[in-house]
Each structure stands twice: as structure tokens, then as C-alpha cells.
Length: 264
Length: 264
DNA sequence: CCAGAATGTTCCAATATGTGGAACCGAGTT
DNA sequence: AACTCGGTTCCACATATTGGAACATTCTGG
Image (cartoon, rainbow over all chains, first blue to last red):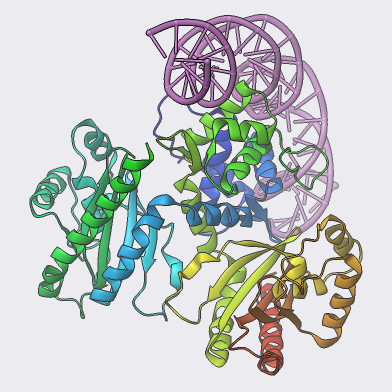
């Protein structure tokens, strides 16, 4: 097994690209990665990999702990923190998420589409007890999350095709959509109704309603959702929130264009 | 003005190091950075910088938005999220932070020393209203934060000297320590008492008590703190929490060695 | 509406950097 | 003592990066 190549066929960004591939392999691995583990994952020659890893360590992107395991470094946190704090889309959406949370009482998510994944940009949690931002920055597949399907529903043509072509369907629960036809049908339904549901398709016992946020000018496809545990959130409640979620998504979309308009 | 060189004198990590310097310059900048802004900051030739930026964009570490401004990319979030989720130190400390929060009712921080900065690894917030992880990943100076001074107090000899030598003292409030002598005296006091106070030294109106967590085996210097607004948290309350904070820090330190011991 | 400036992008020979096979080292095992 | 395994170092060779300069594309003010 080798590291998945970046989408850009053309070969990539030289040295930096290779370094990032190694970094990602280590950072997204399940457990600690020793030198040999990375070696077999990356398929690079030993000497080369060794230098790449040293460089990453020197840069603080990775750290080499006592028992020779490479772990993600803290510099990533620092950079990401700045990235998050200044993210324009997140800032615009924040007050709307708060409002949506107040009205529903359940957890609210904001996620943006990136390749075949949804990256969660923000969340407003219902109960404080659960570890807070466990989710922010998390990447989940598009085809089995409310936010993911909502975001996809805003796309069409080649942009959509490219994404669909790359999806590898995996069954997470009995309700997971597992083929292209199913997903296309679902997207069509979402386009008509303006909302996407996730009825325990990704995690058993978790349901959500989501709606698409789309901004062609910024090439942004995203989604907002309200999520809750199935025992507390029945189908009818989910349906009841649909208009609210849809309106929130629309309001964010509108606010985005309003901000874009003036400045140019 | 040029980008600050990394601490490692020896020159650095070649291509990757340069790319990271550019990335950091953009990511940590105040506002949006256009090409020319980065150019003047980085002091690199135009052609070179242009390619570096393109590569960073292709890798998803930066994004180039509609009005030609470079902003930090979402890939950073994804990587950092994984980094945070799997951080061993954070996981060990988490339950202790929760407990400390329950007992004090105020915001609890966990920060680790990295160079001359404290990077906040986790926090348990007092009121949910305030934006949650606004702080996680944030970097603050060592010499004017409770956690920073606590962490420093665990160091000595050349390790400490190197850090002290690099500090550029800046006055944030009337109470900020602004010279080496003052800091050394403070550290001595902290070593004796086992706790560090921040009496509005960084932000006016914000006070905190902190205690050091230190693990020589993992080369880890860190700190735990309880923070609150001055109007609610008087000196005596701060003093009252001192033993609690000290014990929490000790418990985390102990737990760390306990985990390290067995596994080797 | 045009000249001039400022900004961003592309090119390419020279060269600094990264590459990777192979040798080396040290710790554990048989 | 010989062997394997995980990790590190070396160095001739290949290649990616460099950076100066030319080019393209907005802005800007007269």
C-alpha cells in the first residue's frame, strides 16, 4: 500500500508535495508510526525517507518521541489555530450557528466541501460535558453525512462528476448509501426539498438535518446541520427543523454575497 | 524586515524550511496577504516566491481567494485536528482538567512550552457562551502568562538560559515583567511556592494561578492554570486555588511517569 | 484615453538540493 | 559469535529550485 497521490495528476509540487505526503501519512495514521511503518506506507527508499522525516521534525511538524515513534508536531496546531481564527466563512456563519443552536437545543455543525470530504469548520455543542472541539477540523466522507450531501447537492456538471468519480463507498451502517445511483437519487431529492437528512447513515444512533450553503464567487460548497441522538430526535422533530435549517443556510449564503458584493 | 529565522542556527531544512517560513508568514499575519506583501516580508526573489506560493496553494496549505489574497488553507485544520486528537499529553491531562474546572468553576488551561512560547493544548471553558476553542493552538509569550512562567520554573541551566536569551520583553499591561532580572526573581519565587500567578500581566482584568508539569523523560515542560476575570476572582480566591492547581499539576506529572514507566 | 507605474506571471541556464543504493551501526536473538 | 532487524550515514548522480529578466495584466492619474 502506498500513500494516495494528490488529485492533481500532473505529478505535483516536487519536494514539498512529497514532504506533505509523508507528513499526512504520519499525522492521519491510527496509532504511533515508527520509522519502518512509515517506510512501508510511503514506498520511498530508506535514505530519502529518513531525511524527509528529519526535516519534518526539525520544522516542528512532526515530533520523534522517546520510543522512536513519529507523532504530529505542535507547530501544526499553532498554524491551524491562526487559520481557523481568521477564516472568513466561519466568522460570517458563526452568529447564525449560534441562533440555530438556541432554537433547536441540539448540536450545530458547519462543514465545507474539500475534495471528497467534508471538513468541519465549526460546531456549537449542546452539552458541555462532551469534549469540545473534538470535531473541528475533522474530515468525513461526503456521501454519508448530512452536511456532505447538502454541499454536494449544490454542485452539478463536471465539478460534481469529478467528485462522484473518486468516491469509494464504504458501508458504515445499514442505512449508508453505497453506490453512485443511490447518491444521485438522494441528491436530486435534496435539490427539490432544499434539505438533506442523515438518518443514521454514518453513525448508528445519530441523525441530522442539513442544508446547503453555496457561493459560486468564492467557489465554496458547504453545509449547516443540526445533529442529535436518535433516541431524542425523532423523524418528526427532524422534519420540523428542516425549514429552520434551510433558512439558516440561506441566510448565511445571502450574508456571504452581501459581504462579497460591496468589496469589489 | 525579514522573516524571523528558525532557532536552529545551522541554516535549516532546505526547501521545506523555506516553504514553511513562507507559510508561517502568511498564516500568522494579521490581515490578508497579497503577493507583494509576502514578497516584502520574505525577502525572496519574485520568481522564487511565486513558485513557493503556488506549491503551497496546490498542497492546500494556502488558498488564494478572489481578491488575490493568500489565506491559510483548510488542510492545516485537518492535519492539526488529527494532531490534537491523538496528542498523548493532552489525553492524559484531560480528566484532571475537567476535575479542576468542576472544583473552581473557572476556565482551565493546559499549555506546553515550545521555544519562547506557550502553546495552549486544551481548555475547559467556564461559560459556554464565549466562542469555544478560540484559544486552542494559540501561542503566547512565556514571560507574562501563568502557564508560561510555571513551565519555565521547571527548567534550569543551559536549557533555561537559551530560552531567556531569546525573549524580547514587551509590556502588555502595567504589571508585565519586562526584564530578565525580574523574570528570574519571579521564577525563583515560583520554584519555592510551587505555583505561578499572573496578576493581569498579559491582559488587563485577567488573573490566573498556574503550576508546572514537567517530564524530563519526554522533554516536556508545561503548565496547568485556572483563569478568571479580576472582578470575579480576587487575590484571596486565587491564593485559595493555589494548592488545588499545584496538586492537579503534580497528579498529571505523576500520571505521565506512570504511563511511561511500564511501557519501556 | 493614454502613458506610466505597480502588480502578478512565465522562462530558462546555473546551481544548490534532494535522491537512493549501499555501507554502516548498535541492540536484541538464536 | 553469527545473524537479523531497525535505524542512521554517505556520496556520486539526477533533478528541483533558484533568481534575474522579460512579459502580461491590471490600476492610476493627467
